[in-house]
Image 1 (cartoon, helix red, strand yellow):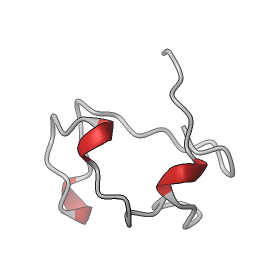
Image 2 (cartoon, rainbow, N blue to C red; image 1 turned 60 degrees about the horizontal axis):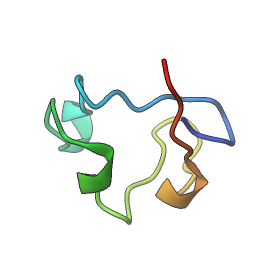
Image 3 (cartoon, rainbow, N blue to C red; image 1 turned 135 degrees about the vertical axis):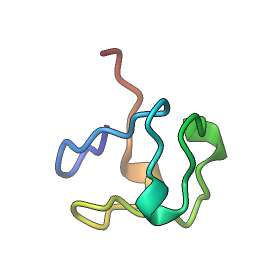
Image 4 (cartoon, rainbow, N blue to C red; image 1 turned 180 degrees about the vertical axis):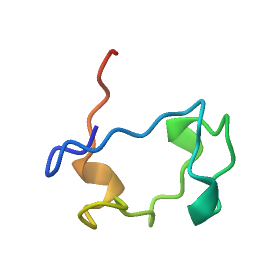
Length: 50
């Protein structure tokens, strides 16, 4: 979950419109990726249980 805006990355869904295939684990998302909602960096995300 993005600590800035609250957007949640779903590993099962991925983010195909940004080139991240469904099933892509969070650890495999590139370090230079940014939040599609607010532009926060990957380091501004925290793992949450849903």
